[in-house]
Length: 408
Image 1 (cartoon, rainbow, N blue to C red):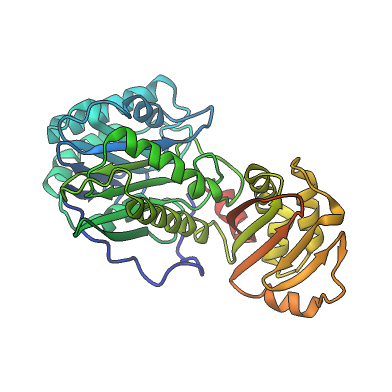
Image 2 (image 1 turned 60 degrees about the horizontal axis):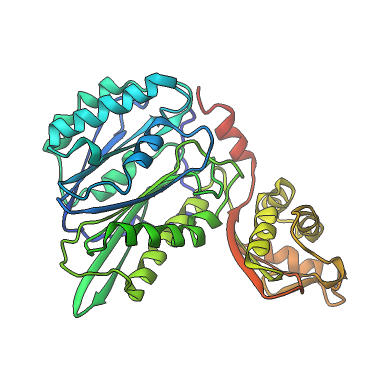
């Protein structure tokens, strides 16, 4: 497998100082699932009564851990809960063996921690099509149990990494009825990133009290505005999983609270954008704003057509203000568009309008703008009130280098 040594130029300066969330503890180990000399398994254990919501990949070739988690979401809230994640092996396309591995791991976690097996959620990320050496994970359960700590969330983020160049974390705190409610989340993801629950593993924890069905509805709605609005390479993973856990330890009922919902969405969007900033080989972070569509859904279709176009993405990598490629992407999207109503801007530079290049357009100014790391491409279709924003990155030689020898 390719070794990633250089941190993305778009990475944040440091991992954030995440608050410890009452009611959840973390531990990591070196199990040697695939990697040597680094942690590759993380365990999180939550107190009894924790509500767990989840959204997952819609891939038709979902991995065994995803199927198991989907079956368990919405079940009992009784007893503690646990999440175990391994990196290096996706336990995907492994037939009945994959199901056996999930059963062995979940039962071992249950035995070691006292968490009911129906409340043990697992995720696997890494190479597809190779049997998971689950016995290496099972052998480390006692060590994981012994290492559980409220303050090991950054270690957990690092243990999940595959081709990621940095661990991803985000947090927020909000006052509700005079009490502080905390939210902290971690994520992994770098390649095989596309909407439909975006390709990644994400775990978000809060000490708020939220009933499970309300938590599930909130998570689903906010996923569509965050993780389902990013793309690196248009490829949807077999293993996407996002779990949101509300321990209730603060004693504050946040069900239906607007401030809590906004804080949670901020954490989710930050994590989603960090995944794009760590896109394999990425050197540019790109926000694509589409307005004037016949509907929000059409606006999103146009935005993703632009964001997923290899021609657009390679032009961005080459710092070429090739607005013709944006026009092409709009035309192929299948959503409603009218050439003679279209306008396109790079940053504050109006590039094209009314089906033709703007008379005030300066190629030199646009080329200078494209040299920046954070770029905005705006498109107005002139058809209606629909709008959407999506986020992507450029496509460079680095993406090819990483993926050409991913399994070696």
